[in-house]
Amino acid sequence: MLSDRREDLDLRKLENYEPTRFMETDSAYDKEAADYAVNFIECLCHTKGTWAGKPFKLIDWQERIIRDLFGILKPNGYRQFNTAYVEIPKKQGKSELAAAVALLMTCGDGEQRAEVYGCAADRQQASIVFDVAADMIRMCPALGKRVKILASTKRIVYLPTNSFYQVLSAEAYSKHGFNIHGVVFDELHTQPNRKLFDVMTKGSGDARMQPLYFLITTAGTDTHSVCYEQHQKALDILEGRKIDKTFYPVIYGAKEDEDWTDPEVWKKANPSLGITVGIDKVQTACDSARQNPAEENAFRQLRLDQWVKQAIRWMPMEKWDACKFPVIPETLKGRVCYGGLDLSSTTDITALVLVFPPEDGDNGKYEVLPYFWIPEDNIDLRVRRDHVPYDVWHQQGFLETTEGNVVHYGYIEKFIEKLGETYHIREIAFDRWGAVQMVQNLEGMGFTVVPFGQGFKDMNPPTKELMKLTLEKRMAHGGHPVLRWMMDNIFIKADPAGNIKPDKEKSTEKIDGVVATIMALDRAIRCGNENGESVYDGRGILIV
Image (cartoon, rainbow, N blue to C red; front, side, top):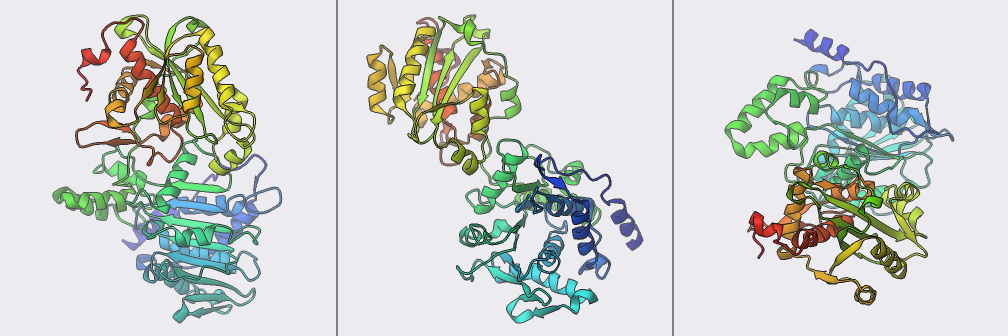
């Protein structure tokens, strides 16, 4: 059995390495630097189970992470990535990889007086990685001669550079005086709050040239946690919704709609399956979860890395993308349309969406023309802060700016007035808690402006209708990237009666354009091109 598993390990070495797609155009892969990091780790030994005492040969996915993190360098010679988020199911070799990275940062990174910290929810959890690191040192004579292990204080000191690795926990830590070169956060999802995370990652490494925050965890259940925040950021970067050249995202797990009992899904979610954990063990756990539904969530969370209690993004984006039918403004001139206006705040995104009801009855498409504005002066700040390509969208003409550091409502009013000369804007719906002055000004220009409540009563029918029309491919939006980004951001809140509305609290990113679309769609469905019967009446949607 040992020889079989040894063979499996050998078969899973990394071949034909290609740098991550997140490598910047001005960065370069330094093979020598990457080889050094890999060789350092592979001089260590495994500390547990079948492999105890054997050389720590990195599995392909582990080696890829190490080469990307330590081999991709900026033009100044320092590492491009300073944060790595690695989310992966249990029993995949997380603790040993984390311990190896901690030792590399402490003993092998060439940093004088490096401060490296191992962080976890409690001292017991934090000790797991420390104990693995200490055993690795004991099994490596070269390190053993140069390292002092202080077991009582959970501290490892590398004598040649006077660097150290120190365990910290959320329940006991000092708030000041950190000069961080490296942080290893083990099981980030167990952090009881964000205090320790913020202290360790916000400015504590500013004095170092290339600090590394190594976050490694299994999926959790708390969607309001710092771990879910990092998970969401990693997902956004992986799927192209955000850009952060310093953040390195790795997520191994099953998608929400995949069959959790399928061995092929297990293989995809568990990159060390058959090496660090046998498929028979996963099969046994799955069989147990099938017989006892109470175990299902634990299986999906720990074995498949699913956030089992997370709020699910509402819109299936493949369905939204299937409605990328061209919308040509010139062909819409003179057409009846309805506007939805979400003013948000003066420093935020303002959205106006025009929805054109179909001219060919029940089979036609609702065409969408969105417009967005942000203040000109803070666009660069927003790009850096939000890691959203507002500047690119602005250059492409999908996002307008107004002068100054707040949204200039007067400019938008003039813009809407011009739109009214091109299109027959029959009504403009707005949040009744919005800007009163702007509403009065629009009314003064001759527009019919109608207040629109943001509760279940008003939002439920058009929100459901938006989904229905999307699934029927009766929406046409031209693939507008800003509206797509917002649509992908939206979460839905439901009441006990099954009514739904956009949930602005859970939708941490901007959704102003979607809210505006829903309001405009409501008016377009109710009024249409003629003063005929409402679609709601024909479809039997209950309006409370």
